[in-house]
Amino acid sequence: EKDEEEDADELCNCNFTLAYGTKILLKNTTLRLMRGFKYGLLGPNECGKTSLLKAIAMDQVEGFPPSTEVRTVFVEADILGELSHLSCLDYIFEDPRIQAAG
Image 1 (cartoon, one colour):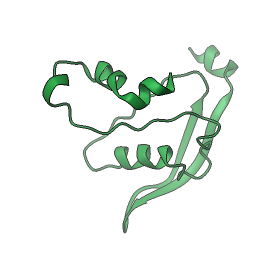
Image 2: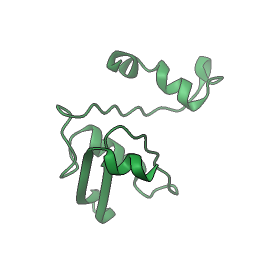
Image 3: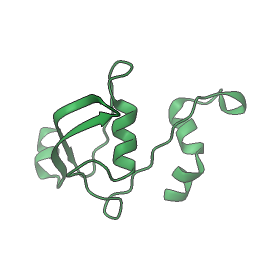
Image 4: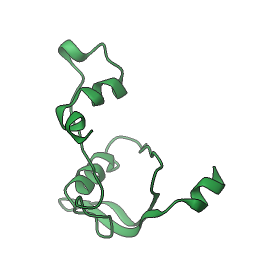
């Protein structure tokens, strides 16, 4: 996998600070992503995962490629009701915005 990463184009190598209101969530944070890879985001509650994903989807992370260059979709929902039997991944693919993105 290391060789694959060395051959991949760099999508993002940015340093940024992210705040929610007056609370600093991520300070001088480096985000490095390679084109063609899949990434996950893990962390405890209230650490800024959702805020970061929203900021990326809204073109608000300095240095992250704009939505005109990279397709990003942020889906936020509690899995309830008629879709509650689906896995998280299947639930995401049921979202019309994901389906429209192809």
